[in-house]
Amino acid sequence: MSLKIHNTLTGKKEDFIPIEEGKVKIYVCGVTVYDDIHMGHARSMIVFDMVVKYLRYSGYEVTHITNFTDVDDKIINRASEAGISPLELSAGYIEEYFRDSESLGIGRADMYPKASESMDDIISMVREIMDNGFAYEAEDGSVYFSVRKVKDYGRLTHRSLDDMESSGRIAEDPMKRDRMDFAIWKSAKPGEISWDSPWGKGRPGWHIECSAMIRSHLGDRIDIHGGGNDLIFPHHENEILQTEACTGEPLANYWMHNGMLQVKGEKMSKSLGNFFRVKEVASKYDPQTIRFYFLNTHYMSPLIYSEDALAEASVSLKRLVNNYRDLQSRAKAGAAGSDMGEETEEARISFRESLDDDFNSRGAIEALFVLAKKTNKAMADNTLSSEGAERVLSFLREADGILGIYPSEELSDDALDKVMQILISVRGELRKSKQYKLADDIRDRLTDAGIVLEDTADGVKWKRA
Image (tube, rainbow, N blue to C red; front, side):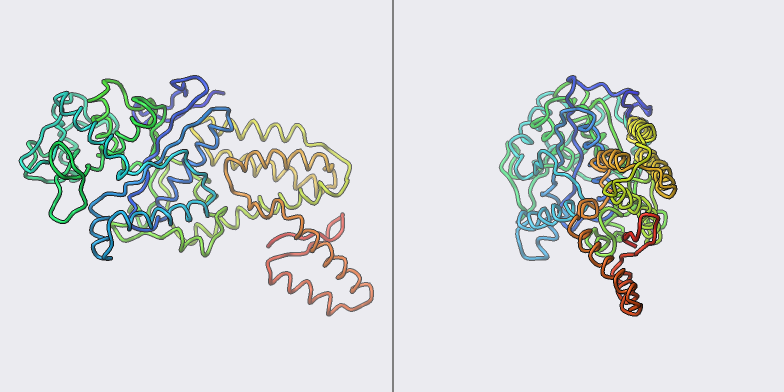
């Protein structure tokens, strides 16, 4: 089965055919760095982390870029309140971004361009758009894209220009010739951070920075452009106009958009004040639970945020983690029995078929649960060989390289296992000498620490609660 991607541009699942065989260029819109990232940001970040990891697992050479908007009205206002420069404020939040993203097991992009460091590319692109007749300079030195110069605006939203005009998401500005036009260069207000340009001091509009960064670092046309579905209009629609005004060819072959994280029927956002910072949530739940919570739903579907949902995800994930721990013990036991070759291969095929079907991570996780059920039964029946357990573990490690839902310390903490074997042995000796109170005290204190002792056919085993 070849990889299929739901393309927002066409509204259909399409076979993925890269521009250059064996290589993928992907750009994912990043964050405006005026505050800590919240769980809505985390969903998009984890989704595209999974996408990039699966593309690489599938053998593609991937170039992945995510940007930072570090020049923006919100940044300027927040910096003014704090009494520091806008770039100082944004630099601090970029550092926090990396701390939070790394805490969630998110791999680094190949590049993180910043608006403040891309001014030459941005100004050059604005000039080219003007030279090609798609933009005009206003009285105050701002430059606007003339939307009605384009015949097919609205390709991603599949809506007409008139429909979008009534959407309520159009910024009013007396300098515009048409209310649908948008700024690609903003003249500087007194005291604002600014850069010199042919139109006077100013700074870029929001949309132009992504177009300029993509063109500078990835070329005129890329394979995949990603982001949350709240960016489809106007941000991504406007990116298309800007780039095509310069190149005359499509910006991206495939457009991917994840669904919004919702709180009480509205998308999670800072502007609505209904957001939960990653730091706050990560203090209560481990990163693997957070990743499992997001990836156990198809990326395009809306997802309701709640503490109950995260708690349910934690309970569900423990079934997989406990299965992994039991397989580790079985692999070390020297047991005879089935090698689980057929079952493991079936799981691998199902896992890959799910991810090949528009990165269906929910289906991929279901394949892990089906395999866990089979291996749990084999271990309970004492019919799984140590070699079979290791075969299954090898596949689960492959899968986890994409999903990142198994706690890494639980997968390889041999030192803890050695300590537990000592405690189990000591407790066994205490019971033989009828010192039951001390033996029970060891068991109870381990339970308090989140470790459960279980009597099995192979002797006493331990696992995390």
